[in-house]
Image (cartoon, protein in one colour):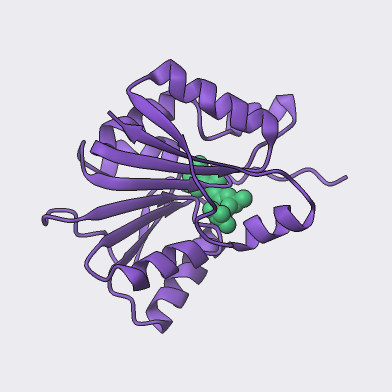
Amino acid sequence: MSTKVYIPPPKELEFLPSPPPLEGAGPFVLEIGPGKGEFLLHLAEQEPGTTFVAVEIRRGRFAKIAKRAAARGLKNVFLVLGDARECLTRLFRPGLFERIYVLFPDPWPKRRHSKHRLLKPELLARLRDYLKPGGAIYNATDAGFYSEEIVAAFEEVGGFEKHAVESLYPTYFEKKWKELGRAIDYWKFVKL
Ligand SMILES: C[S@@+](CC[C@H](N)C(=O)[O-])C[C@H]1O[C@@H](n2cnc3c(N)ncnc32)[C@H](O)[C@@H]1O
């Protein structure tokens, strides 16, 4: 079985089409790891008055989503090439986002890779700061052990109320895991 290769984060952040304009009244929404960007672009079309910022660590994906957003004429999508674990503090002010989506984060099932898992208490505490009170973090996970770990991490960080929700959008990854018969947990963690 092939092992996924970890791609180290870029040293400098890059933006497409430009750094996000974060000074206005908003609303602002963040997606971490948009993958192929289907959900991000869908939301941006549905909510033209909202600024959508997505942080993606893989250059190829970052570039492709930006191209798709431009092809659809979307002016409210801003892509950041970077590692969400390190770039939030460099970009955003606390209380900025109404919603944060982290859908199907890579589970890194092997123990020696577990350090790469995104949703750990340290990042969640930061995401809580970047969320408005009453705002929510949405998560979908197909790996049972990771889902349990995520729920435990939210409990450790505190300040959230957990709700089970329905699928948000049939992304490539959601369809793939469903076809393989995997059970998927969908959560919404509301900041108290
Ligand atoms: C399994 S895919 C899920 C994509 C999408 N959210 C979906 O539901 O279809 C995980 C995505 O997270 C990105 N990613 C992984 N670690 C990241 C990090 N530290 N910062 C930003 N993006 C990351 C990956 O490159 C990939 O695009």
